[in-house]
Length: 123
Image (cartoon, rainbow, N blue to C red):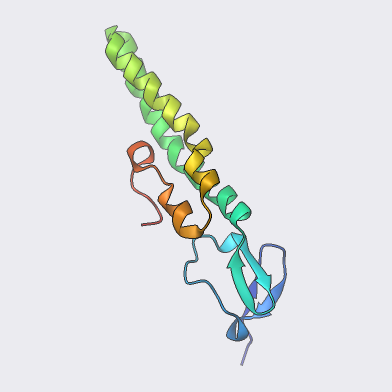
């Protein structure tokens, strides 16, 4: 029978059958091994989270560029202002204070701003 190993963020590995593994695998790239216990390294989890925010905002920024161009063509000052505000919120999303303030994975997942980024991938 083959042994299955779990590898943490630093390349350390452990036999999966002997490990205490977090139930949430969203931040598997942030796992840190201490003996036979695997936990999430919050600094690494925040980097993963911010990367996911950047991934989600890409298409939203592209769509908002179209909205802005239509407002520009129509010379609609209110629509241009709204679009600029929305694009600024999208650009600022990875720097949200809730991300840096998160002390555990649940708080980090709750930092997903659905009003800016849409549905959370962590729901």
